[in-house]
Length: 66
Image (tube, rainbow, N blue to C red; front, side):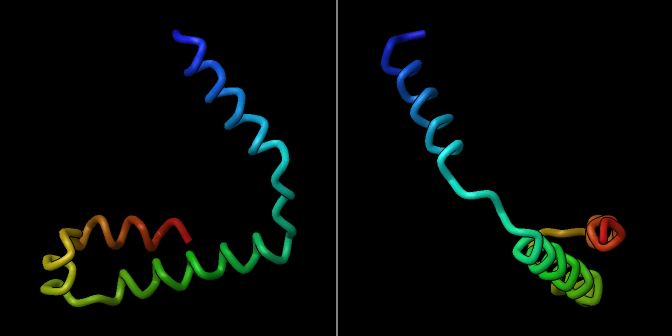
């Protein structure tokens, strides 16, 4: 491992350490947005899922995560 890659790794870790933690409201909003998106994905017709390269089984699996 070169000195440059060690420096980059340490820089990334320190940058993450300096970011403020996500508030519980932000986390709840993000969770709800993910929930809505997964439900919308499950409601898409098969031809649309095929267009975006997702099978019906994959869409149902994603929706069940919510």
